Amino acid sequence: MRYLLLLISTIFLFCCSEKVEFSDRDRAAVEQIRKDYVSGWLQNDQKKILTLFNENATIVPSGLFPMKGIEQITKYWFPDNGSTTTIHSYAVELINLKGTDSMAYSLEKGTLNFTYTFNDFTMTKESTSHATTIYQKNKDGKWEITSRMWTSLDE
Image (cartoon, rainbow, N blue to C red; front, side, top):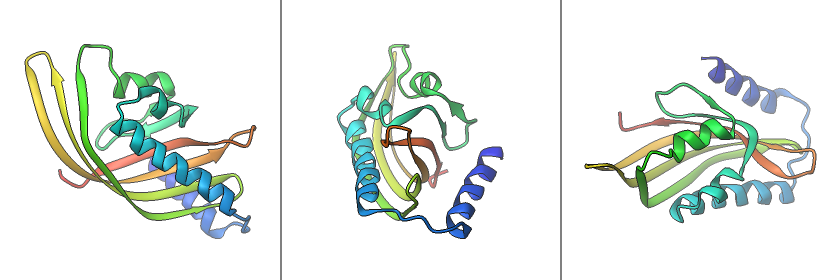
């Protein structure tokens, strides 16, 4: 609930605060993160995915508690337990992208098809979800993901 309130507050601040330009260059940088995120999953490139996130980023997977920091995110997405996840397809439709010179958010609809294998168990699933991602420009001027939450539309 706390993260939902944070998300609503962030979006409210975007809408009601003094407008600071979200330049074409900033928009392109955030768009590149979005593209790299999808291609990272399609390429099964753990490093590519994780380097898009701020060290203290938070993810909130559908139906689960928030996970804060790269270490927790890594354990969730890339567990060291012998399991494998193969992404067959991942398509993301941008619904909205807004920002200022230092923060931005995107709203997206995604469709993911994957196979998860652990020991003798194998599961293939297609999932559709809505996601909200918050981006922030760090002190070096580089955009990073600071928060990503998604809700499965299939459940």
